[in-house]
Length: 514
Image: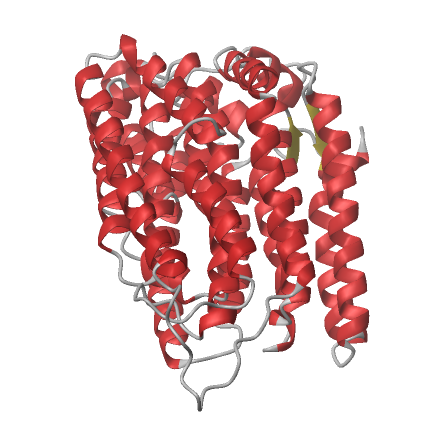
């Protein structure tokens, strides 16, 4: 049994309390420890990614208790990809937080940052639905602390709204887990995948209700319409580095849908037949449209970026809702792209705020470092809007191609292309107001000179932009890898065999469960 799998969870779990107990009054020590921890996370994530790249599924049994009785962590191609994406994003976000001194504007930033990573990594690696719920709660607690970092009435109000919506999701999650356990007697995903198939067709009401509840919970996490109301204010009011890290948070919901509804409730399962396409695709298309209309209508730059996250999640969910290998592969390629692009845009929003005091989309005198900031925004806007030649364009082509076999191909193409046009106009409008129309305007004589954004901050933003470029240049190998992930997801026997080792023959389900 390889112990490296648990390190992405254990490492931040040890670093966070150490920072609170031993370095709470020494910001320099906090920064060094936190940065060293994230660098170690990147190294571990690369190792796990490399090990899983050949299709190997690796199992870790806590206390050496075998599944389904014990807690297990599972590293396969999908989970290690998400772990690596999280670690890389966290590294550049942390660098920006240090450069911009956001970590000094409130208490316990670095400890909360590490707890946040613990929750995200755990959600990606767990092989058990109950522990997915546990890690969701770790995410909720840490993210609330990060969201209200540095205080403020508007931030506190948005954080309260965020917590209330997610507590609703947590309640539904508990109801779903109770229903699933009552029907099957297990919450281990591999074991559950086998037991659900044994439920007779005339006794599927309970498990179907549980599947619907799970889909609602994951849709809340993914900010899918009409369960998206918490996101615009929450992300816009959160500190910029926190919002940039939250770019991966909605992907946790998308990951959970992919994992559960290809392993436990696959499309061919009679008990939940038709559930996936009943409302997931329409909700995804509406999310895409509303998100990009919000980009066009936004009056503040941070809110524009928040709505672009909703739109990008709509695009991801369009591909996922197809539940075909081509759709899942395209969705995973676009998940990597949209996570990096959203992170860049939130950090650019903070660069703009540093130079012009507010993020209102109104012509104002030029900020310090306008040219470099404008260049970074230009690249990020092209990526998020899906214009050639960057990865957003490639991702949209892949999603459109995957939609050819769908009965709703006309709707998919019309909404995706229409939303893309709207997003181009919205980002062009924002860029012209922020950077072009500022020329010729003079600062008032009694106003202070705008602050220059930190150089390390530009390095962090530039690092994420370079990853977007790399994701474009290596689109071929990246797509080959996401295709391999999709093939592994739709052939889960290797996953189940590894987790259960010798599954054996299951008994027939008795009335009321096992």
